[in-house]
Image: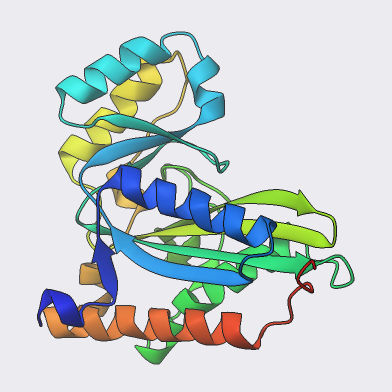
Length: 243
């Protein structure tokens, strides 16, 4: 498999966050209806802006950077999350009409449907739910065998005729290693947050596929997600463009 064949764009985290912001602005301005991308980036921590208000945040950033995990802020909600070459992200952005009365749950299901569909195609059962001890835990985690495989977040921007929605899913190709877990827990400790992340609360695609763990199998899985995401955006009703 060559880089040109891959459904995943390898890019700098700052560029990926800029791409998301630009596509959201395009949708809000009526220049396009939707966009989707699978991407991966270098090792880093990504924190919601709300976390920067905690005492000790600057100290936490310094310690994380010294450990090789530079910190970036993001516009979507959620909690502290890691990024690395062993993580693949799905960004899905779209406009939703007011008539459709889309809610947070609808947007999450629209985001996660391609991932759950690809898992099902691979013979893997998945569901939604909290996973105690997982990073950025939430009820719209995608779980496999009771462990977190993917986490989700979203951001809404009101428009005159609906909403521009930015949604994001983070998928683990391999479960977090000891260094990642230690860095996350040190960050929380420095911020004065009583939270402990447990490596065993997570599962990676490498473990899920079990007997077929080749790069080709991973490629097929991610290609299926890309196809399903774009098909979903193509057939979904959207708000009318502003004139």
